[in-house]
Length: 131
Image 1 (cartoon, one colour):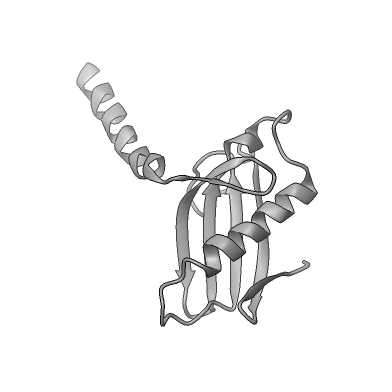
Image 2: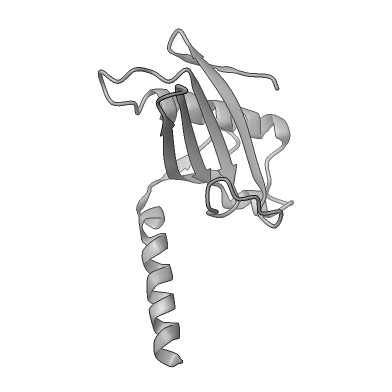
């Protein structure tokens, strides 16, 4: 049993190692986030950028809705558009999400706070899409 636990802990550590290697990004609200994952959907022209924002887990630290919207827009502009490789077609839409902790894509988890916004990419800028 002890061997199984050690292997599980070791594997869990490996799963988080790439995330911990990512540099912190300070967004307009002042919170620090880490890049987690980029998912490209070339057939639809959508790029999804996922970030971990631990402050979302704390009601005392969580930025306001307005500040979160500015954070998401800044991540779209500064991370999404600026980090695209040269000679790559810009996505039609960038969806930026913040999550209090890493979770599997597409899996709902009511215990983890998540926020996201969709942006149209026009004239080399991110335009907030209203749902």
